[in-house]
Structures are given as structure tokens and as C-alpha cells.
Image 1 (cartoon, rainbow, N blue to C red):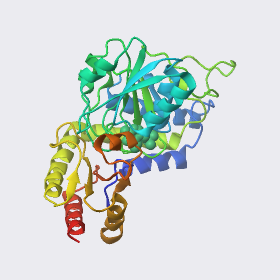
Image 2 (cartoon, rainbow, N blue to C red; image 1 turned 90 degrees about the vertical axis):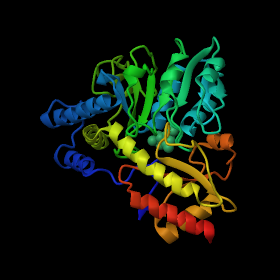
Image 3 (cartoon, rainbow, N blue to C red; image 1 turned 90 degrees about the horizontal axis):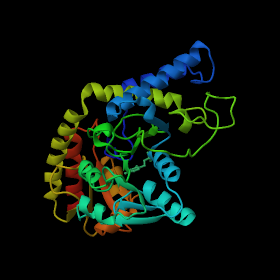
Length: 378
Ligand SMILES: Cc1ncc(COP(=O)(O)O)c(C=O)c1O
């Protein structure tokens, strides 16, 4: 089996991730922050250390500003529903994922929120000046996916932040956290949503929202936090304000171990190597007649993922052939991002997407390029 669907979920996870999860389940298992005994304290310690590791990896000085959620989608919902009020205006881009598009559609219906989706260029890159042009005196938030999950194009966040003035920026870093260096504090991102199960190499069911000290949010969920239990009111301090109910502690243990693993390996070096490898793959598939590749020409400002089609064949047929004949797992269709496909003209059938990951070798990518060439010839 060759797994090339890392943008949907990375696989396999490093051994240290599985060991941390099993270690928690076998030896601790107690509820963090709920009871005074030593096993509960050990569970709370694991959550604390994981929060510290995520904060270090994402360049956040105060780890209390890292709020754990089950995934990036819940983090984006927390940010949007927690911040936006009746009649607010949002600027976003034309390649956002449904994790952004759908809550915004709901907020349009529920709170008369208006949305300007700025057109990217054909490679999926947004021009910061068009974001500036979209701002009005009602603009409460700008939302940008750090990288498109369809095209892999990485947006110029620092330049975007520069044109926003006092309007807060929400970054959807679902595809980039763990794949490219991110420094939330240096960037001055006000909110950043991440997911644990993609390039961060953690388990599914983990993720979070990083919150700057300037942002006031309402919680999405209210309830037990193990703190201030005498009060009917939600605690007003971080992270408890946004973390009601028992946490996914085994998952958080795995996420913490994954972040320590990535910190030790160095994200910058890994990204460079991944892009060199992927650049060679892109060169090979560009030579396949009838293969139409979307997105950026080169390897700068992109991730190790590519969307393409074979002329005259549906993406789902190609995906099935890759799986059944070659044991190669890819994703086909719209990838939960119909806006991006409308932008590049591949709606509604979508594309075939190959996404490399930490475990992907040159051999895996060579095999995929050969398989695609054979399918194109057949
Ligand atoms: C750009 C982008 N945003 C958000 C998400 C949602 O992530 P999750 O499914 O972990 O909530 C994804 C997942 O594919 C994504 O690629």
C-alpha cells in the first residue's frame, strides 16, 4: 500500500505518538483537572505539557492561549460564532474549505453576516491588496486558509496581516501546522485554527484554536471545567473558558508527543526536503500527456500536495484504478472545498489529489507517477 492522502489525515503516526496514547490509557486514565488525586494530577500534567509543546511549535509564548478542540472545524466555528455579531462583515478568499464556508453561510442566515470572498489568482494565491480593497467599516474579521487543501498554495500571511489595520485575522492552518514553520506571535495572527491529525502527526479528534490576548470570544459550549465549580457562570480565564467537558486526553497525549517529535526533527528542514522530493514528482507528472495540473508552477509557496485531472477520465475512476490496480491511496472529488474547484473550473467533479507526508519516500512518488503514466496510456 502506498498512502498518499496525508492532507486528509497523516498515516502512519510516529511510534512515540502511539506509545504516549497507550501509556496514558494503560497507566493513567484519570480525568485531568477534576479530582485531587495523583492520577488526575498526572493526567493534568500530560495536558499541560502537550499545550506547552503545541505553543512552542506554533510560536505562542503563553500556552494558555492554546485552546484544545476536537479538530480545526470546531476551532473555526468557535472563532466565527464566538466573535461575529449581527450585521458584521467578513472578508475571506475564494479557495476556503467548507469548515469556513459553511459556518459563514449559517452566520449569514442567523446574524445577517455579510461575506466578501476575494478572488485568488488561478494558482490559488490571494493578493493582499484585494483583501484590503474588500475591507469596509463593518469588517469584523478576515479569514484566510494558510494553505489551500486543493491546490497546496500557501498564502503570504505577513503581507496580508500588514494591510488589515485593526481588523483581526483568523488563519485556518489545518494544512500547514506541522508542515511549514508558523510563528503566531511574530505574525500577530489574532486567531489560528489547527488540526492535530494532518501534518502535526497527532491522532484524529485533536486540534485547537490559538487566541491572541486582544480577542474577546464567547464560548461555543458551556459546562464543567473542573474549575470554579461553585458558580453557574463559565470561568472567564484561559483555557478553561473554552474547554468544557472531559477532554480527549489520550488524543492530547498523542498530540503532545507528536509536537515534541516534530520540534526535535525541525519543521523547516523537513519542509525543505519534502518540497525537493515533491518537486521531482511534479516534474515527472508534468510530462504525462493529458495530465492537467492545477496550482502553482514551482515549489515555492506551496505544500507537497497536487491536484490534477487526466483528460477524458473522471477523478473517481482514476482514484479507483490507483487503489485497485496499484495499491495507491489518493483523494478524489471536491475535498470539502467546492469554492476552490469553482475557482479553477473543476466543479463539480473535482480533481485527483496526491498529498505526500512525513512517511512518503521518493519511491512512493515514483510509483505514483508511473501508475498515472500507465493509466493515461491505457
Ligand atoms: C484548509 C482546511 N481547513 C479545515 C479543515 C478541517 O479540518 P478537520 O477535518 O480536522 O476539522 C481541513 C481538512 O481537510 C482543511 O484542509
